[in-house]
Length: 420
Image (cartoon, rainbow, N blue to C red; front, side, top):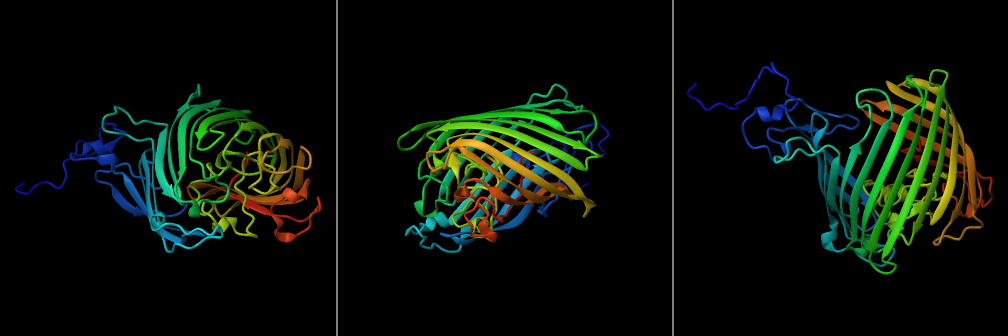
């Protein structure tokens, strides 16, 4: 034709197999985004395209004491849902307000930005770098960088069998604005090396028969101010048992951990994940965040899993067990969600250098409800737990229903994660 072609493509009818169709088109392809299509990033949908990379755009908003409402935009990219997964974001706080500490954030700290990647396919590589992830962020007065590699060591990749994985990585977190520093953070820069190893074994070929797993993790780091070096190690064993067509479950967990001289943001917690682990949660990370407000009773479930206790309580050493009996009450509502009822109990022996414990023994028990399953493309967990008993109630969280200091009292917490 006399006109310049709009696009030159190899094998346009796909008569031969080629998993990556992006390189069938001539032209530059930075970050794998050449010819990418923009879409709206709808919640609960995993959007992908075999012919193009996608750039999914969405607005962002969260609250902090120092920055008030923070408003921005986020772009997430992927090809075929697997490679060149990038996450870019830019946001600006609407104010610089003096906090309860008597400090006001600097104007520059109102600008929030982040960049993350997973499974990149750089031009110099002959194949995607599967398992490689990392990123950089400037969020709420903290600069964070991380890089890690995860390996799938499973002996049977294409069949149901033991799943074996390992990872090795490094994380750096460097506070730069004390006025915006979130709760649970020391004003100490840290650099940490960490690794994990895990095995998960299905009980049988039936999908609802349960599994057993063992996960180990350790980290060593260097922090500003004495003591300058720290370390921690964790070991978790789980057993999930289902019967009656998957309608009943017995869930068990054993957890042991120890640490030495860890900064607050990397410390072991009685009931919750550490601030380093929850850093990506914009509604929980910031100082005075919505999910940290009095009476909200949100629990980022993790650590030793003693769910009756305040998520800020940290320990130096702990041995704990968690148990839960659950029954499916309503199957398959709203497509693939189920409502479960449960009774639970947790117990452990701990020591702490930051909180005063009335003896080493801690325990709780109660009942709860949980919604589990898939909402469109995403796995969903929503728990509402009511710990009716808490030993050492001075450390208990979830006090929205009562101010009683008794072991037996009405308390409640909710979470978007699980231990199993």
